[in-house]
Length: 133
Image 1 (cartoon, one colour):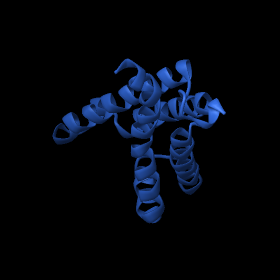
Image 2 (cartoon, one colour):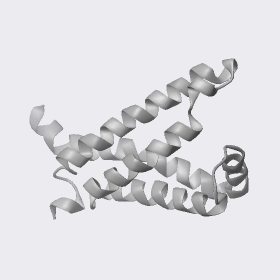
Image 3 (cartoon, helix red, strand yellow):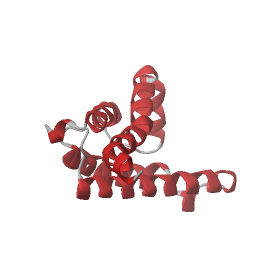
């Protein structure tokens, strides 16, 4: 069991971490105007440029995680990018009472993903990755 987990665990972990970013980025492409309006409402400056950068980070980062190419750098970029995203969009401490719990859950979910990125930055992509070739 340990041998199988050592071989396939990092690949499965990278894919599982990437899914949320891939779906989110593709969703932003499909609803560019709506997402830009939401970001502007949240106070994001240079909204359309920030949205394009976000899409590139999400879709590109997800693809590179899945492929296992340059994952330590990619995990670092995603980690750093998630800091302002988490603070700006999931600030549960300032959310209305009816949104407090969901925003706290989203905040903690992002912290957990950031922990995963620290793990990838530390241990790399694993055996089934382009980084290993």
